[in-house]
Amino acid sequence: MAFTPEERTLPLVTHVLMLLSVVTGFTALVAVLISYMGGKRATGIAQSHYEFVIHTFWIALIAMVALMAFAWSFTLFPFAFLPVYGRLLYLLVSIWVVVRSIVGIMRLTGGTEIINPETLLLPKPATA
Image 1 (cartoon, rainbow, N blue to C red):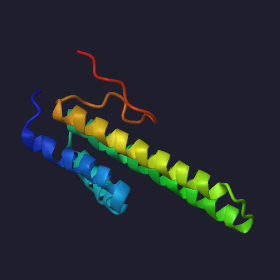
Image 2 (image 1 turned 120 degrees about the vertical axis):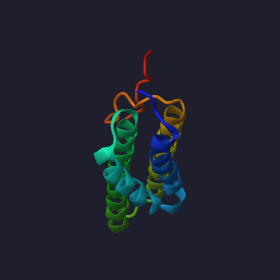
Image 3 (image 1 turned 30 degrees about the horizontal axis):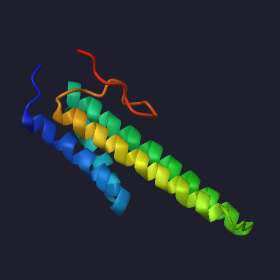
């Protein structure tokens, strides 16, 4: 089945919005809303990319909430080294979102689907 440029546009927008969310934050919410709405009527390649963005959003959100709880709990019992670990973990989650977004953009422009969008790490490459 052919994957037309029109079918590629909204999934590409969602990947770019997730990429921008590392800087802005709120664009991730827009990306996941588009993915939920677009995923209902999408099939094949586009649907796998929407699912990939949705899973990236929820995993990153859970990680960020856990990091905020971690940072807040240590404000009650301050230790000098813990803010450094909090920033490092935030940086790691941000890098994870950037890498997943770039992989999604590369796969989308290549016209391939995301084989396992639910994975925590990077999805497996599509085999021919």
